[in-house]
Length: 343
Image (cartoon, rainbow, N blue to C red; front, side):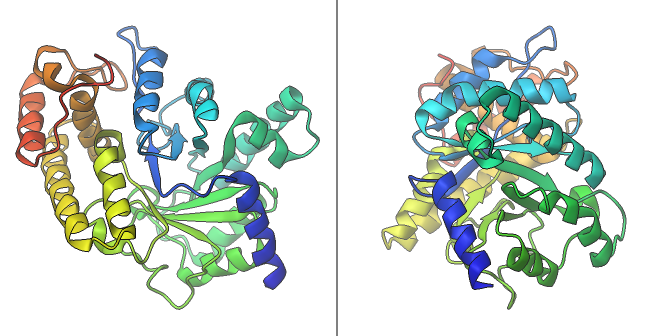
């Protein structure tokens, strides 16, 4: 056990020599009118996030990872890596597959591609050379899978010996790994370095099995300040639109100012709830829709009402009435910005 913990700490120092990021953004994927990836906007967005966000997720659930082709996922990753490495931001490459064996295959293929490109002879060194800190992996999709089945499916991925961040999101996968099994993975595999909980149940960090050497991220929106003492950081879709405010929550709590942090947390919570209600009127993932509505105002600031919103996956247009309503929600909660990253 002590050896595994020591190896995990050594791995974290290699991956994050400047310290592990507290705020992560699962980035939206933006599209051109022709349906291609809008690399210009994504790079502009990334640079605007840099002062507030230390970690990015490329082609995750918020970024349409389940719907993008593998070629499109690689394109999104390369766009993220172009600037993030120079800025010192860390990137997790999301590998979203319904079956664990398919996720294993994608990681194996990508590791081979990195080996051909960087020729370091060590998977972790190749990842670091690319600007990556590992792979974000969801549980396999399946109703009522047992703990034993989930462990059996995920074990080959853990055996690869590369940095893995595991995501618990029962709303997507329809199952979840028990705190006991998460802890057993952590005790056995030092390269399992991060666990993100998007369930809203927070069972692992509230359990007796919470492992201090395993980096934990809260992926569920709302009431951010109240979870400061339980998690090591936040990885939420709303970071696409409220990154600076979310970062301030963490900073205020670290500075011993819970009252200020609670006030910011409440305003973000209210704004996100309002945006989610609007997102429910659109096709697709509700939280992603909410983040896309909010990001429009972060992109264009005071000019947002005069600019057409970017298209969603599949070329769908966001109704202007939803943009108007989103702007009112953001303004009412004091979260608007004068200047946008696209202006």
